[in-house]
Image (tube, rainbow, N blue to C red):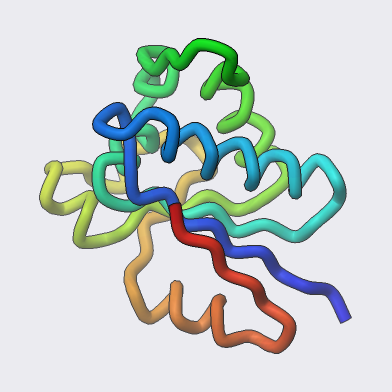
Amino acid sequence: MTRLLVVKATAGADAPERCSQAFTVASTAVAAGVDVSFWLTGESTWFALPGRAEQFALPHAAPLPDLLELLLANGRVTACTQCAARRDITPDDVLPGVRIAGAAVFVEEIMGEGAQALVY
């Protein structure tokens, strides 16, 4: 049985350490071969847009653009439907590979057999 790790990032530049932790854990897991679904919610939703990850900086942390690139290449990245709508972000605005989906999809993922969810 393949286990799914679902990581939800709820913070962005407003809480940089929490944001970086979510990206770091998710990208470390995907680099280790874990099936990862990474969710951008709240202020982290902005990182679904081109160029936004490049604006994030946290001393002694891996560069967010590199982590996001790894997640897009080897996992699934989803921006929350309501969070995107509150920020006027549409499917045409997001980076290639980012999907926009809502709570029903999140619940389906975390309720799957063997799934593990982490929220930062």
